Image (cartoon, rainbow, N blue to C red):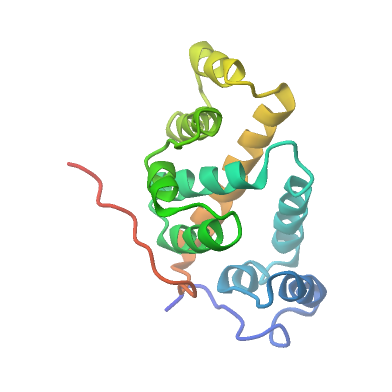
Length: 184
């Protein structure tokens, strides 16, 4: 059970969030718990959807964005986001199980995508304090300055949802995937 109230429906959500939640429903066919929970704050929902929407027109492709989401969720140990992005990765981005496992390990079976996922994982682990060598590696893999900024934005958006879900202990409404235990 969530530690923060999750409205049961769009109609029981704050009035100022309802139009945005209806747009989510139209786009996804349903309104996952995360969106209704974030909708407790119309400002937070507007910000999240705005930044998410901006990434839909990004130079960084949707598959790589999903790969990064899986890596960040694993590092942050967010079962809600691992569950959601495993589902989205398989069904929307068409990632196979081998790729999803590689992503959760901070890599990819695709050479170029692997550089982006490794860089994203390092951003999380180093809290943004990446080295010159790490930045050079992602650049050498063929990522433009715009794409590097979009990798950072993808990390930030996923960190936000990971943290919200961990603070709230959001009830998982996707097939459940759990983070691996941390090695001692």
